[in-house]
Length: 440
Image (cartoon, rainbow, N blue to C red; front, side, top):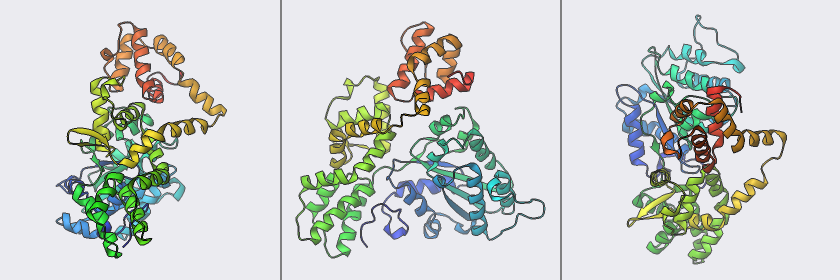
């Protein structure tokens, strides 16, 4: 086999590592009652490969006592433009997997463009003994305008029906609370309660897993790597499998051309080739994450950042869970020298390019207006009392006492500054609209 760079892994024999995540997945969905779970990872972390791996019949047989009683349905949410698309695709996959195409005379199936939760429920009720696990990849898709909080409420309702056994496994970059907030779902919604309390993160591979991933394909092609080759590839790529395979593939091409790779030259070449993927990451990070990564890349003390120690520690924790930073010999470092170089030399260019390519039409101007800090300050001071601001902070997971000053205006400015520093003023706007309607 050669290195698989880009496409999801389809054969279990080509899948490396993730043993602890796989075991945790089956622990959650394979108990006396299925539970829903959230899988989190950055783009190219391997979330799709993970979902397809755990759904393979040979892997189910390894971890489940009665694997034939489990049906796993994979759906890529990026192909669903609206809820009806999701329900129609789900119903067809269920019919294919379970072998029944009719819901019976008591229920007349809706037309494809109007398929609803009730069509799926009517079908599932025929299989009370079967446990259905829906693997919902690219769950970030629900942020588009055609999905609303009603969709998540319907998903929650489907797991509560006693006539069948159903659970969800979502895969996304954004956590479920953030995604729910983006479409207006309040933090207190029972939707969140059906998910296992802690998500399954997809970070980098373990040391031994990386070694096997690097060595096996090269050896099978007749060009085994030396220990020095393996060490240099790991130093450059870090531990996320996509970048390990891309770097190892470059090394193998050099070996086949009877050329000894130079690590620094390889770093310069690969940072350009892999830049689009790093840029995808960068666009997803908020301001705090970016500044933490810049500090670590430049070996600067994180205490210089304009955030509290708790905020910095939380950013480091999340970045570590995503595999962006690692701790080596008690010191934080960026995961892979190629990404270090990109953060140092390319990140600022990516931000400038994003600004230049931002559409300058009426819709965009309107969006900028509603997130104008001066306008938000007037809205918060005119339409909210101090107690209302305290409640608003609570709904956003904040403590109003963390903001300086005692007056309503001081607290409003503190709240706006908090979200502006994270480049997420839209989240504050959404919370305001949820409380007061379309006043911004």
